[in-house]
Length: 127
Image (cartoon, rainbow, N blue to C red; front, side, top):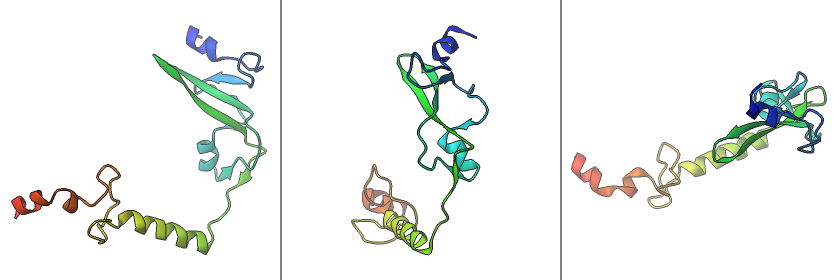
């Protein structure tokens, strides 16, 4: 175990307050939110029971919180109302605020409008 792993290894939580493990070295029975979701589970209100740290050069460490798999609950199913709200939100992301048309793709946040409205001269050159 290298120096970086030793700095992140605190299974009792004496140094970091909660049990801490090096990146990709979490013990069995624990999972991150994404790992729980891949199994069709959610934390279900349980507190964070540990963390994994990945040290980075010149920046703070990456942290992933761990939850107990045995205390996780199944993911709630989508209701028709939730599906409708999601469809409405996705449709709003496709609507250009300048020309008020469906762009056929999600409007880039950096442009704030569809590509044809952002670069009208390019359309004339292409024709």
